[in-house]
Length: 174
Image 1 (cartoon, rainbow, N blue to C red):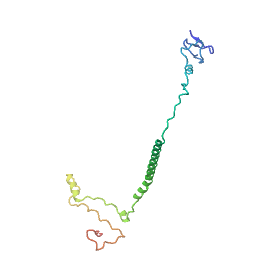
Image 2 (image 1 turned 90 degrees about the horizontal axis):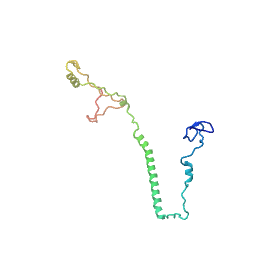
Image 3 (image 1 turned 180 degrees about the horizontal axis):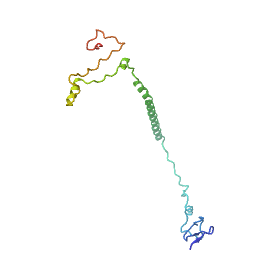
Image 4 (image 1 turned 135 degrees about the vertical axis):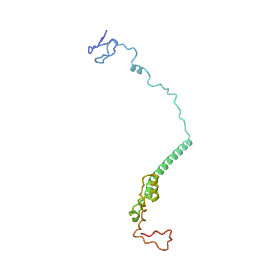
């Protein structure tokens, strides 16, 4: 037999504890066990401690505390020294690297010269002709182009004196 809620007249199943329509507690409800709130209220909140059993404080000797303070002080000094060394290292790095990487001025004569373009020598040309039979790299009777001309001497430089040895003297301009 369904249970009817007295507040909203909604029919609920026989084993319902609360109304399906208004969520109120239905009449004739008998709990099968005590509620959690009643269980918690029945339990003591704290265990009772007797006042006669008071713990006595343990005395620490002052000499053992001295070692603790010395050790803590050494740890702090080590930390400060390592942070200072790291900071000094960071400050020193950029100054050293900028001094080393300063650009070097190139002489105008060297900057104005173009790098020589490589030209094939007769030995390389004849080797190429021997590798590809039937096709000659240079027609017979022609000679490969000569190598590049020597570099021109800068205008501000004077010709080498006769006192220099022939092995270190520069070739005469052509």
